[in-house]
Image (tube, rainbow, N blue to C red; front, top):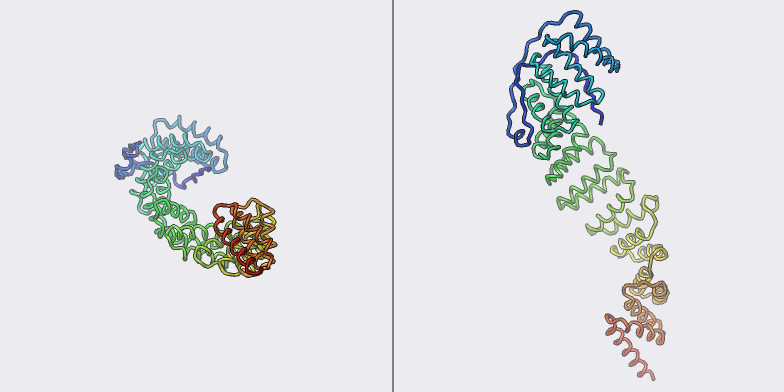
Length: 419
């Protein structure tokens, strides 16, 4: 991302502080913020002042090469004038930062700091800018002390500084410190930025602080209730908290707000309803989503719809869904399932028709069970011979051999009695 550091309105001078920072994580974790002693402003000739102003104007007009050429000339003429030289290096740093030349920007800002010539305000502003360009180069450990000292020495710290420090701590995998600083930023801001809340949600989730993540997601939904991802994230956090009722309620509110438009979201809502033993609602959600083309009319979704209706004991609805799933299925399982429902409803002829279709289509995992069901349906219609043939087919499958044999014996006994 392009980092643009705005030109500060006052290009004053840096402090006399001896700023020497550690470069290892352990050093950064153990160091204490340093007090910055302000420097004193010096004098600059009218000619040099005007030339410096011209360089700043070049920068404001995005004539960066012209600005750098003039600043390089000023650097030579002010070689023995710390006050003016500090301003030149500071301005160079801003020009380099504006053009994404972060390594050169950091060197220019460091030179400004080393001169120890500017008052406290400009010193701190330059340190903050230096931290930004160091972070842009992924030199996070080098950046942290500058931000810490900026915060420590500032009378009024903007919330953005705490958020920036939190971001940098996260880059060096110090999640607890990141959370501490981002929380501080949020607490100081009347209307926290959406990006800040998103960031801390991720931090809380990483630390498994789910209740805090939920609270921040609720704030995000107050800011942007139209954003589906926040509803989904909140629901997921509730699932992680084993609060499935809240997870479902969250998705239901999102559905009422009309923000669930993706097929995955509607499927998730249906499955959550099933999980919470509310299958009828799940069926309603899926059925409506299919009507409005939010959910594709395919085998997998028709099968899920059928599952919701079966769980709801809405067998006619289940049969309708299965009738749409069956032709799309890779095997005959759905036809057999329809046949079994008809068997339970004592609609023997319909059961025979569907089970026969299932056997013919093939690929059955429990073919023996299909033949057993066929035999029972045939028996109930009085087709004894067809029933015997189905039970004999079922006998070929070890798992159903005993049941099939019992039916065959029963049929033989009945036949003997009749004759």
